[in-house]
Image: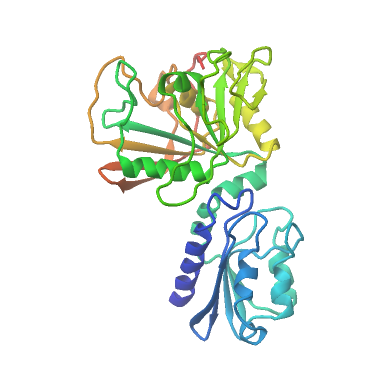
Length: 372
């Protein structure tokens, strides 16, 4: 029904409001409709706060709830965590119908909430705007099913594919709107990762600075297997804003680091698959990689990237020695290129953002041992 779709779209829009704040929980929105009129709405605002269903149910009487249709973007939970099971709200006051966008992939739920509703005689419909709901919570879905962080590769480049001039100058390639979109990405991810040369050359803050609204700062992870920044006390002078983790040799010292993670090396660099496993164990659900070119190359070759967001500015930089977004050796044959899928394009001022997902079934290797 068109009305069902309209109300579920509203629930998805509400769920989006929790982006970045609810980690490691999913974003959830709930709309309660009484005789075709929205009478209550809710969304999960922050981890540990009331769930979307609880917020919505608190806005209407039990009598109204029992005569209403509930639209929720994710299966109501049936287990006790930091809050009581949401399914109990509907078991106490059964609504006329519950429409669920997608089942909860969390093994602790695994259809249990829907089953409890059905056992109580409450009609349940699932799958409405399921694809949209799954994409909304792509970070949560991957982490809860694999215990590995979702990885987004981001860069800002010119129209001819350069991320800096031949002299290394890169500020600013894109405009204000695209940079604000980057800060929104930072807000949405638990950690942001860069290579030590990017830190040395660009001196980035790697914090979230959203105009007019509060943002969440991710953990700043620096890859420094070669110890380029070891002993440097001038990196990240704003150390209180967000923690800094350095991945490098535990025998060296990084004065700016809150933590040093020693991991096995991979062809002269950090084994990123091992790092992702370690980060997942630490509760890091998502990582935004912001370069540079060698770091992105390693990330793609190590097959840790799930999605890319490449911002493209209408500029031509040129230069055979200018840095490109993905450096390294590269592939030796077009058939070895890493295939992307579901390519989309969005505008941010005069810049474009190309978004695509990595085809996890494809192959990507140079046929040679790569550098990292």
